[in-house]
Amino acid sequence: MSAHGTAPGDRHRPTGGSVAPAERAAELTAALGRARERLADACVAAGRARDDVDLVVVTKFFPASDVRVLAGLGVTDVGENRHQEAEAKAAELADLDLSWHFIGGLQSNKASAVAAYSAVVESVDRPKLVGPLDRGAERRGRPLDVLVQVSLDPPGAEGRAGVGPEALPALADRVAQAEHLRLRGLMAVAPPAEDPAVAFERLARLRERLLAQHPAATVLSAGMSGDLEQAVAAGATHVRLGSAVLGSRPTVQ
Ligand SMILES: *Cc1c(COP(=O)(O)O)cnc(C)c1O
Image 1 (cartoon, rainbow, N blue to C red):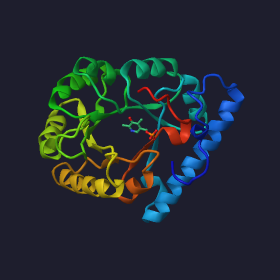
Image 2: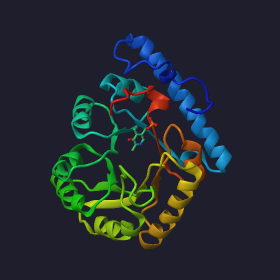
Image 3: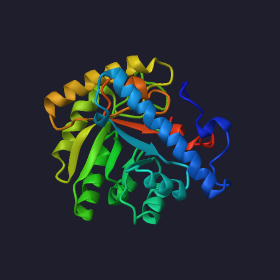
Image 4: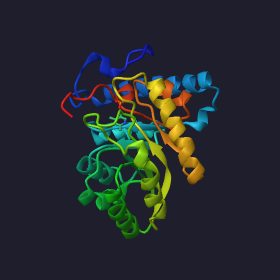
């Protein structure tokens, strides 16, 4: 966490299930307000317009009731990283006008099902996902927005998520050629062992190269609770905030 006030998670309470609804709603209202202020400050610092950057609230591990509260506070975009959990929440909250961003590791046998409820799949990191996602988008009768997740880790790093920069152009071409997919841009996570400003600078250059080939791929999803300022400075159009809004997640992920 940065020095932007106390997030609910600073009290290290687990997922919030045992708190009275009114208290939880007050907590979420305050934390969302602080997160929005932080984002506005980051835009000012970077000399960017506030409406250049969209807030995606990452609700993984938190109950649908929290998402409902957030929707009531004007949140329109939510991020989830597990298919079963995302599918269940999207079904339970189908009465709300929410855009679901899938941001997690994706198995190719689940990809088609993820397309059924997702507005955007941000974590496309290999060619094998393109066919199933394309079929899923065709089945739902609406094109699916896709971001290619690119790795900012050193080659060979453990637990590396995302396509390596060398394989990015070919994967982007594959997505762009899929009839029912729309290549919208890139997603990335800063590596834990590096200054995020340096990592996001590399990301900004990868994005420039992608835009030269795919001018409509303007989305850059980067920045989480710990590094949104650096991401906004490097041109992020979407930040994905979890703990800054909802508090700390259980440590087992
Ligand atoms: C969990 C997650 C986030 C949110 O992380 P916080 O540090 O809690 O803001 C953002 N992006 C991805 C890909 C995630 O898995």
